[in-house]
View 1 (cartoon, rainbow, N blue to C red):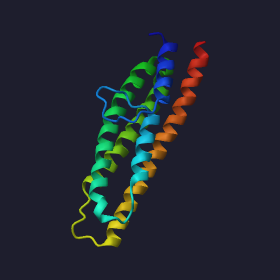
View 2 (view 1 turned 60 degrees about the vertical axis):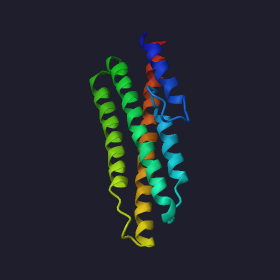
View 3 (view 1 turned 180 degrees about the horizontal axis):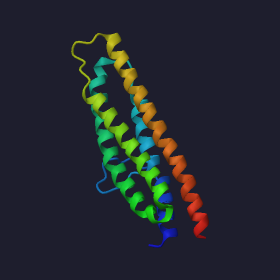
Length: 161
C-alpha cells in the first residue's frame, strides 16, 4: 500500500462509527471511541443505586473493548505514519496515544475500585458525578486528538497528491 492509500485508509477508518464494540479483530477509530463513551455516558442515570452496578458493569465492558480496539488502531497509525511524519510528530502522536490509554486505565481503575456497600445516596451520587466528570474528560481528550489527527492526515494527503 502506498502512502496516499495508507492515509486514505486511516481517514476512512476515522469516519466509520460502528455499534458492535465486541467484533473480533476490528479496529476502533477515534470517532468510534467518542461515540461509545458518549453512549455509555448518556445512559448513566445519576443517583439510582438500583441501576448503578449494572451500569458500572456495562461501562467496564465498554472501556475494556475500547482499550483493545484503540490499542490496535493506534498501533496501525503509529506504524503507517511514522515514516511520513518524521521523528518529532511521531513522538507527539505516541504521547497523545499514551495519554488517552492512561486516561482509559485511570477511568477503568476508578470504576473498578468503587465500593458502594456502605455509602448513602449522597455519597453514591458524588461518586457517580466523579465518574461522569472523568468520562467527559476522556471524551474531550479523544475528540481533541481526532481533530488534530484529521488536520495532519489532510495535510499529508494534500502533499502526496
